[in-house]
Length: 254
Image (cartoon, rainbow, N blue to C red; front, side, top):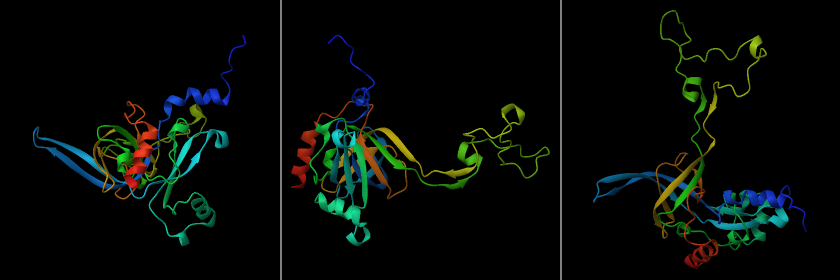
């Protein structure tokens, strides 16, 4: 009884990181493009991004007892069964969900954030005025040089410089650094195509009928890309509780 509680166990480690996990699942949306909302009273023009939710459903759950953590597997869109592998087709059939084109996981804090399997998550899952985090793959630039990729200033335009105006220059020292190129050296290479998280985007409008969520500012990626949106970690949680949100989403689609 007098012994201290061990803090090196997996459960203790999960408890220490609990504050970094949202209370409820997020959703998958398609980026439709950007527009602006104009307020005639104040004359303020607010740029915003339009996201559309397309047949977003809960496919399955991940539990701490079976998988070591709590998560919700979300699917969006639709895919012809002939174009789905048989193991994945059986996974959808087991849970009574139509084949989805996109499937991702959203970590949640505990079992209270696990909606019912098959529940449809619409635009009403998010409320106007709340803040969300949006994750998407940035637009791919292809192979880019050092000036475009890292913002190098380049070499002089004249004074004896020939044909190396946009060249990177030296890639490393000789004996002083081990006659090698140090790991992480900024060089030319593939640019873009990486996941970028835009934090604390305010939800300006929600159109439940058309599945639209309008957020303030920009979201990474081209038009038509898949965006993962979830309650912002660095802002207060929305007033609605996870179980109430699940019930509302089910009622809205009933």
